[in-house]
Amino acid sequence: MNIKEKINKGLIVSCQALEDEPLHSSFIMSRMARAAKEAGAIGIRANSVVDIQAIKDTVSLPIIGIIKEVYPDSDVFITPTLKEVRAVCATGVEIVAMDATTRVRPNGEKLAEIVATIKNEYPDTLLMADTASLEDVAYAEKLGFDFIGTTLYGYTESTRNANIADQNFEHLKAIIAQTTLPVIVEGKIDTPEKARKSLELGGFSVVCGGAITRPQEITKRFIDEIELGVERSRA
Image (cartoon, rainbow, N blue to C red; front, side, top):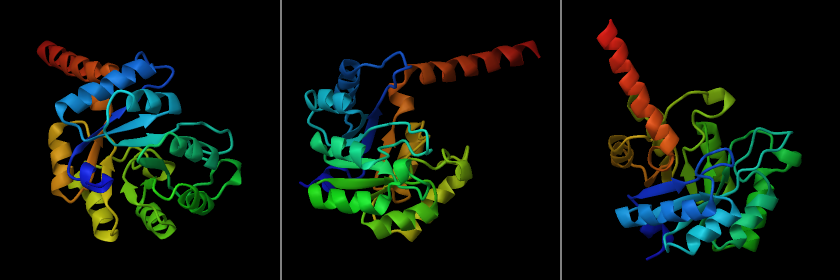
């Protein structure tokens, strides 16, 4: 079974914790990945070389690898330059995801050149385009990406606060109608029902992160609902 077959119509769990988060630890992320695998996840999305290596040592699931790196001259930070893409590829992950928006990249690098270089150096590594708009989708498909991700919809200046699951998933429907590439649905999929709906509408697979692996976000949702109930009882 090839990688595309392994991750088709299943749940990929994003196991990430940044430096300022309570669970920031490669060991903890590897255990998150193990828990996800035991529950039936078919893949993991992971950030940083050390986390990827720890997860690879713990589970045998396919991994979508990224490196989040902030540069002062660009808003692009998901595997933003050739340096980060090469570093992720060198870990041996099956899929590397990167920002595939049309925004200016750090150091003036060009996405087309990054993709061409990696396709030559790592021909067996699949590339996932983290997109925010339909324009990005068309751009990524033209450059030769293997997957389209909805990851950045709602997180760029032009799509700020948009939600892939709003308005009956209209943006997802538009992407699926436009592209021939497999679409990995990611971004604010915070309930099992939204995950299921994403696949029913034609998503190739679905990524969930914060709703599963960020306890501070999960806790806040409970607290907000409890406080809402308290406010209503006082009204």
